[in-house]
Image (cartoon, rainbow, N blue to C red; front, side):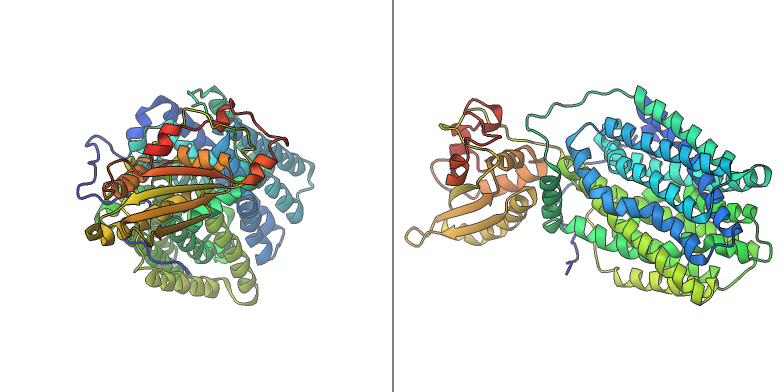
Length: 576
């Protein structure tokens, strides 16, 4: 169903000499930017609180003699809202102020955390109520997550995005190294309720930092997409973006198998001869320390191996780690092996995330990240449920052994697939604005638009033209066209017509606004093959339905900016 992606991706442009990376751009360079540094530090404390709380929550269920399925359900209810709501919140994040969306989502997280804290102080924190409270917190996280990840490009320059994404992964895993140990130590001193309260305070600090973050928000000339319309646009983009589809498939398979290590680690610690909450914290801390150590090597490993091979190697090694966890009980073996597992985890997840951040244009970035997260967390949720049920009928070590073999096998199968090299410059926005008005009023949200572009291609350039229009077809369909065809005149063999249909005029304007430097390069490559005395002729046809519906809301008059169109562009610019 999904074809392997070559190095010449449909989201990149062929180039003999890729733009050089600045010599002074390193892993920690984004921390020199005040806004990113302040948010990063506040997020570190918030992540510390989250991981300390996760230890307390898992131990509450385990200490209450909850089943393996109930322990695994903590992972399920944590990931489920991200799976169900991510695409909707991604549409919102792509169309509205991402900072405000993050503030709203984090406010819900704090309210859910306060409810969890209140239940704990009142002594009502049964395993099922704990799962419900965590679900409420996860809903707030699902609202926040797409906007949070897409906002990285608003905090740092484009050439620092990959390093910033890696630093955010380091942040998360640094908290994973310290937070569980902190949670385990606090559990030995205080009740879980105080740990839940600590998490609320840490999140309040992040909320305050985001409240103080002010930046210039570019004005949008077009109205925001509606939810259903935005979801359709994201799914349509994914259908014609082999990069996005490949990342979704591989991250789902990775999450399906790798989820066992997170779902079953509390039980592994509890059933160990030296089992305690502190041991569980140490095991998670070893994973986090490995992630921190591995983060310093990710950039160099990615340059040496490429993103695809690095992900496959990391998954293969993580599978070996899980097999080892299911085979031995000696702590001096388990802890170093978990350090290796943490390095493999951050190598895979950071590479997935950075690929989406860099290889997807800004107009759909939050939605693409949401779809990637949906795939990853769907795998984590289904995997946690599967491994939890299997551990109830089998044993925890045996389940880890099976999951590790499955992860290693999937990594070997994915070796032939390829992701393109990371290059953000080609996806810089290069919109094509309209400047004049159409001659009549019509409803821009109703009826379809047909765009016809006429090219004159000499016979000797026919084969090259056929190759050049293949990425052009994907470009049109990715950016919003619903149908695309290429016709050759039966009388004049040098005359070719590119025809594509767009759902409505407003969507047509959005297609122009979504053009990137890479898209422009594809269009220019086709243009260079045109041999006519004048530029290719572009015509726009509006369905009779839109004119008939012009009296219905939201019908607009010819003077409205949404209806603006340029007759000059219609004649000269095939990107119209």
